[in-house]
Amino acid sequence: MTNKEVTSENKVAFYLTYIGREAYDLLVDLTFPEDPENVPIEALQQILINHLEPHNFEATERDKFNNLVRGSTETFRQFIVNVKHQAAKCNFGANLEIMMRDRLVAGCNNSQVKRKLLAQKTLTYTDARILLEESDNIDRALETTPEVMFVGKQQHKDKSKNNVNRGFRVEKPIKKPRPDQFGECLSCGARHPRQNCKFRNAKCYKCQKIGHIAKVCKSISTKYVENSESANFTSDSESCINTLHVMSPQHLVHNVKFSNNKSCDFIVDTGSPINCMPLQKFEALQLGTKRDLQRTDTTIRGISGQQLPVIGKSDLQANGKEVTFFITKFGPLILGLDGLRKLNVEIALLSESLQTLPPSIADLVHRCSRASGGMKVPPVKLEVTAEPIFCKSRSLAFGIREPVKKQIDELVSDKIITAVAASSWATPIVTPIKANGLPRVCGDYRMTINKGIKQSASTTCDVEEMFSDLSGAVLFSKIDLKNAFLQIPLSQESKAYTTITTPWGLYEFNFLPFGISVSPACFQRTIDTILNGLHGVRAYQDDIIVFGKSQAEHNSRLQLLLERLVHHNVRINASKSIFMAEKFLIWDIVSPVEASQWTGNEFNPFYLLQNLKIAVSYVHFLDLLNILRNSFHIFLR
Image (cartoon, rainbow, N blue to C red; front, top):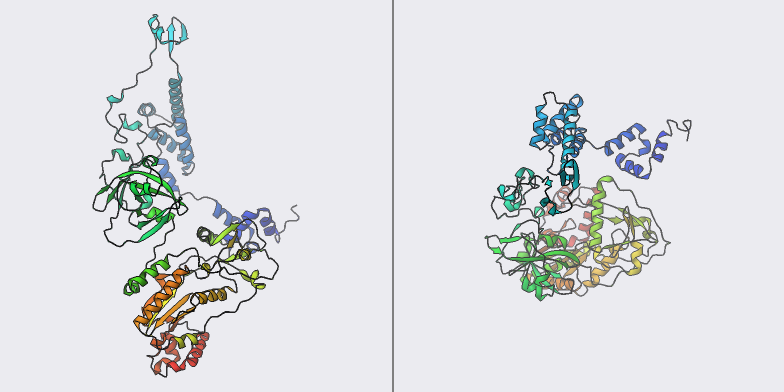
């Protein structure tokens, strides 16, 4: 390339070509939504500089400079280098050498050397540096000088300790002070000067203060942990753990399966940062013996102050994850926050309507909320007749890369998707934002298998049929299925069709994904098969409606439905479900119970748009009129 080839028209193109692929991808993200080819080259350079060049805050760097102090094991030369390195960030200008000189004097951390520095009336930075380096040389010489004997003018190395009895005069080393000449160090408890203690600037794990360790901390010995993230449970420090002592006869339990295929129920305790197991249960499960336990100084106290003796701790494989359990002499089986996070245990906050349900139905709802591993139904087979299509991954905006990567990691840990090395199919992903603000990872299957997949008939019922079936019912329940499509397993040969390509590699779905044109029909066919034979139950997409003309009829139908869902391992979202309601919204339209109580004013279009809580749009209004026309018999009662 010559200067004649580069013109003002193609300068940006040459620049984007020669900066490399990584820099180009970064510019695409930084200039979004504009195309980098349409941005002037000066602006592109400034955007890269502003993004890559670190920004130093002068006030913060000067504060760090003013607090520089030589460590007890740090040489003077190392201290001088640290002062220079920090001064380069402070922009002292003409006062650079003055500030560096003052910092060398104030931070040398040696009283004898500091006296020599202050004794000079016109001390400069160069003088201070030379004096410190000379002191460093003297210290090194004293440390490496061997014992020698003087015989006249000759020097001989001491070869034997018996030489002291032969009339030679031996130069004895300077005696070091005995430990008992000093009191206890306030930083660590040993007998030595505190100014030379290596724990002088350590942080205490009990009171979180600087200057001492937990061994000599004078604060209250029992510290209740408020934030489990800050607790340090290593054997090098002593921690005191506060855990809840639940006296209720009913507990929320979670079953934990260990590597030897033995399992037991643990009490879920969100007030405890650690996991506890009594020694008797530890040995009964054949997880080890007392000799296999690791040493720990952790102390566990209940909310009333009662101490629970800790024997040791053990790292066990629980549900395929490594979890640390503290073994106690006695006490309950506790699964704390540490275990809940590592085992990805979800605690569903059930709706208030569950309080009115019979215990047997409430227990079924709880079991359905904890279901995992997908539905126990025959795998869905996708029939694709098109030739394989492999698309490259799309570049993601820099701001959503981290959330998307986190969502992909969660799908992998839940075994919904699996990483693959190669595939004949590859679909780029789209990341629509969900109501909770997090991105949903879906494949844009319009570009690949949707073009040649064999369509399947849908059995989705119409709204008119739903209203007709609900006629006369006075009590309703609406069951919401969690991640409905992602509960239906795929056949082994169908998984390759669903492969998605991401900036982090290829992944194939193990369950029916969103975005495939036949996914709604496959799901509806599966859910209809599960509900086959149940009376008073209708399904529409991820909602299941249960209705009855009396409370006894409704509860009987609801229990049969939940038993069927438990049998097929269907997971529900209890927090979004509604139980034993007299009226509720179905797809933004009121149920027939409320519709039967309408008056003539409700047929006013503006009244309908205001009270039915639907979007104010002409299309929705026409759909509503069509529903009212076909279901007019409801209003004639």
